[in-house]
Each structure stands twice: as C-alpha cells, then as structure tokens.
Image 1 (cartoon, rainbow, N blue to C red):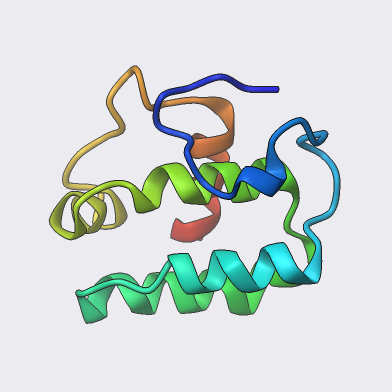
Image 2: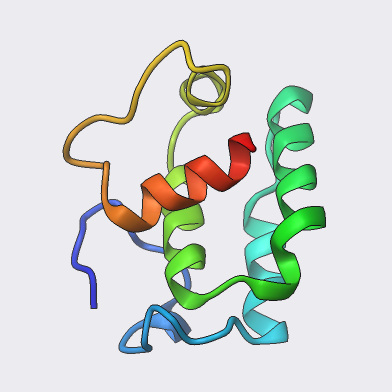
Length: 103
C-alpha cells in the first residue's frame, strides 16, 4: 500500500490492492468527496467521472482523495497547468489521476 500524509480518503480503501476495481459504494463516496466550491474545478471533475468512472481502481481513488485535499485555487492551478505538483505529493497514483483529469 502507498503511504503518504496526503492520502486520507476513505478508510475502507486501506489495505486494498491499488489495482482492485473500485466498488459502487466507494465510487459514490468518491463522487461526494469531489464536490468543489469552484465551478471550473467541478467541470474538470465531472468530465473525469464521465470518462473514467466505470474503470476506476482503488489506486485512482487514493489519487483523487489526495488531490481533493488541496484548496480550490491550488487545484485549479494544477488543472490549468499554471503550477505543478509538489514533489512530496507527486506519487504515481496522484500523477496518473491528474493526467486522467487533464485529458
């Protein structure tokens, strides 16, 4: 399992294989957790779920939870490529999800 202070997320994901498919319940919780205060962020996130929800994994969920811990403006800066991930946050899971969000 990936240990990072940035990945808080859903305790039900602890100990699960990162490649395991995300359960319907975990996906529902993830959708709820991604609700943001900025419409711009919501648009990126809605597109992400529309394209990838059916094949998200536990690892993807961990990456999403880490990104959702950012402030809205910091998250938008990442989405608009005005800033890059900090080295301590740039785990493979977070980088993969960020790439999926920007495609």
